Image: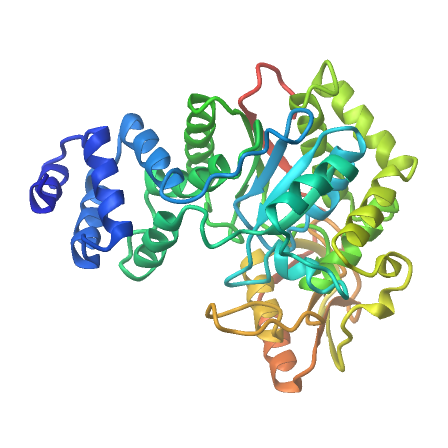
Length: 440
């Protein structure tokens, strides 16, 4: 095969064959195909698109470019959950304990954050002693013993995706549905779970800012998962304002703990119950979606979800006392408040502004090399639809650098829109794809 000819083929709008895509990925990972030729191909793909067969083939080629995880030693139907990312998204720390408390094994690999806030791995590392790296045998044994484990993604999973994503990021070739879907799903398929629940965010704090695009992406990912023999369901969820109230690593872990204690914000509680309910259904521990949600609500109410979180923290070397004593988390030294200038109702909170504010505090990364301040972040006291009086606190900013915290407050001051008329909070779950029932 000839790379120039394949670039020309895609440039002319013709479909690449499975064996051609496999050859390209193999050559790129091996180093025999240079970045500049892959960049040209990516640009041709962005202009001409990928059909479903090409997207499926690309996903499988990237999946097979490195290690794949064999979860067969784990008893039961393994169910994974993945979010496309958003501001204040700490659902894994609530969903995984609830689902596993209901008997569904959760063997999950998560990533670090780049941008607004840390990823799930960063959040977990705010727990003193917590290990995000386990030996494969230890990982499998822990899931069989307590029902769940969450670790960082290894360097040997989907190396083709890592190389392609880094190149897409600097060549303006990120925004293509086939490339996005294959990137996400190659990692999920390599991770080895039997079923996958996708949380596809939509809004100004998400990669997909409009509902039509989010639905298109979700449907494509569901098709990819199902074609690979993994039962896949996607929920389209709101990210026009932060999820919950806490944005930042230790702040989000604390909010997840509070949610499992029954004290969480309404939106994170609702989303966690529905996502974990879907997981329980797909995991064969409920005969209907409604029963799945009933079971996860019971696990929340009777404290089994919180107990599972304690076991999980202890199993991975963390200090489980953080569940009762939040002073054990990394502590901030600087605090600043943003107050409302007028009375009325919160009409809008731009999630992207709050995310950038959190990044300014030190809670997120601008580059992969940046160190995250695990104590830093933003706490949003009012959500869309809430009444507010002039002088009341809208948000509090935490960190260890006064200049950074001041910059965060200045950024977040643009996020809030207050009007005189009452408004309703936006619908949290827009649509569920991949289930033959209405459950919204």
